[in-house]
Image 1: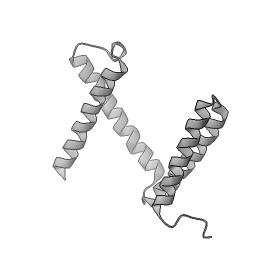
Image 2: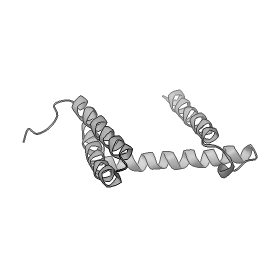
Image 3: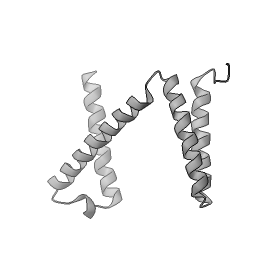
Amino acid sequence: MGFDWPHIHGVLDKVEEELREIREAVAADDFDHARRELGDLLLITVNLARFLDTDPAEALRAATARFSARFSALKREVAREGRTVEACTLEELDAVWNRIKNHAITAIEKRA
């Protein structure tokens, strides 16, 4: 019907707008509003998936699988160091997470 963005850039701008609205609602301690804006953000990301020619449900499944694999690797790495996830600071966990993520990206690039 013509009510669509001509380019992906308009969709990306809308994603940023919805995220900004969530930030503003959270800053105002208006979590009901933040939840409504989250719905808008989810809806626009489904539209973004269309522009990227991908199935949003499959993209979510793949992201969940990557997260699960990386979290399992994080737990193994922390245990290898003789610690538990619960005993680590957020900064320590983030550093391990980034090492795991970068290792995965490097492995993918080597296969390409």
